[in-house]
Length: 358
Ligand SMILES: NC(=O)c1ccc[n+]([C@@H]2O[C@H](COP(=O)([O-])OP(=O)(O)OC[C@H]3O[C@@H](n4cnc5c(N)ncnc54)[C@H](O)[C@@H]3O)[C@@H](O)[C@H]2O)c1
Image 1 (cartoon, rainbow, N blue to C red):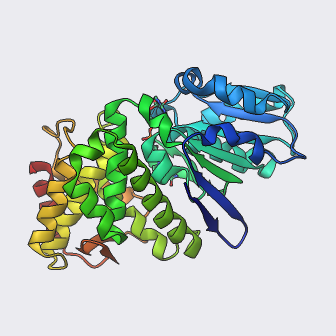
Image 2: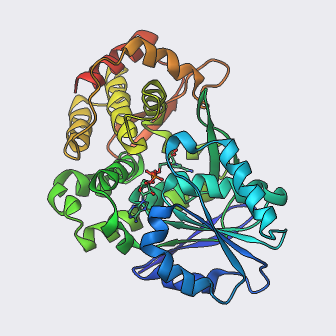
């Protein structure tokens, strides 16, 4: 299976997508590295620790555990991990190996970004969402009470190792949550990928290896290409936020406890599509296709009792809001989006109401 590359001004690194790639970790640990700090969660280590231990056996190493969960994706946890690294002999020659879902790869990536002003990290994402999105592109960070990912850093990894086979142990709801980021990639820039998701839910949901590998490869290719062209999200990388502005508001409003990140993005894509149609940017048929495609990968947590006005107010605290102006990524058709801050505020509330109803 293929290897992809991200090329930014500061670094070029490979993304290996291959069944069995976990067993190649030792090839990616620099020969002159000091202590290897594996940062992971206990559930993931129980499943894959045996295999990975063999890969790091010849290097001095320590295993550090992060408790997991969006509520623990906080600066205090990063500090606690850094203290453990100091107690266990970490220094500037140390390397972090991040093994887990997107929360873990964000937290461990940020730890590597700031420990001794930055040490290398190898990312080993083990959820579908982290494999197709979170672990690629060097965005790392943690949440504030005020909102998601409000403290962070761009820190590109040494390499990303993706093994689609690890998804077989993923809980079904977590697998479906990752599918929504793949639908996002289809809508923003890859119509073939969108139509695969739209027409083949049976094969997608049954983990057909051929389909899983293709979904991952197409997503990785797209994300690597976008990040290589715009590492710091000054321009084209912003298209990856399709569905996220609305989705982050929903996650925050429900206390990060009700919706998985991917599920919130799913709802956010429906809201953005509704807004696109109201703004006469997106044809009605395309909006219906997006909504149908998203809904075919439900069920979703209930949205009853959620106040649309509170969601609308929360959009203002998203980090993509600049000088009080909210920037929206609106689809124009399947495979193309535009970024605009110029929308009618009444439509925003109406789009939220519509999306809560479908
Ligand atoms: N940095 C980025 O560019 C970026 C992009 C998208 C999302 N994110 C972030 O990703 C996070 C969501 O990540 P997620 O959806 O992967 O959730 P997650 O990290 O919570 O992982 C889901 C659960 O599955 C478990 N798990 C992981 N791999 C497993 C496996 N192979 N088998 C069994 N269980 C496994 C995890 O321990 C966890 O309990 C959010 O915080 C979001 O902000 C970041």
